[in-house]
Length: 146
Image (cartoon, rainbow, N blue to C red; front, side):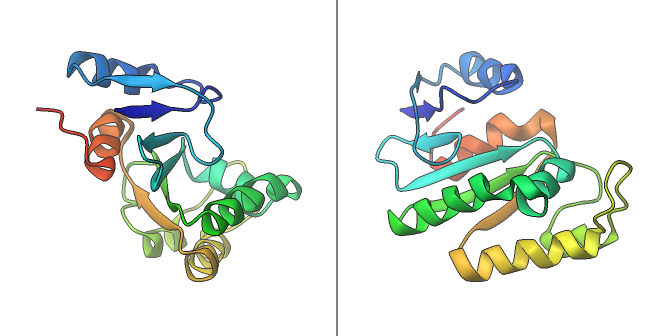
């Protein structure tokens, strides 16, 4: 069974995928992440795009995000950040070529922060298109969806 955090919002596209594939899920509060396997050893924290990652990793409001990834490491939980940016961004190294419209933070700076979090906390950063997020979450958490 898949667990969906109660605070996860704007995820109708994911719930629709789960419902269309008869995947059972339970909505309850998670200490870390937005989606988890039932035993909680792997969690996925979904981000809508690179702009959200800038807010989480570089802005003055980054404390909550870093507290969450520290909590994951302390509890020996593998955390995957799944970014729905889409387009040409498929790996962390692709982020360096990103030119934000609304931020003064460059793609290079964000990429460096992501590598730092990966090295320091073991966070994995993966990318997908919004249309494939539900499928990707199921694959990463080992949930059958055929």
